[in-house]
Image (cartoon, rainbow, N blue to C red):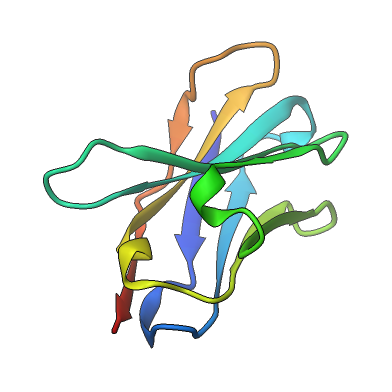
Length: 119
């Protein structure tokens, strides 16, 4: 079983930065792909970014490319999402998720952290 705990959300102004963290426990994440998703009221959950833990390959949704950077710290079993140049449309609850790297469905989810960007 994998447990995920997010942190780092908050209220910021447009143009500011935030760094979200996701601590992984229960199993080493080396055989997992990790992702960030976000959800706003009335909208479906949206993929934001993902990383293949062992190789570090990253993927981003087009709307965040160039502004968000995903990284991981092997020693701390922690994944980070550095969010720069935040926009009001980035406002959402952000969720960390994990899936075995050879599967397509994210199996484990964190509780979410709220990010609010004011204009």
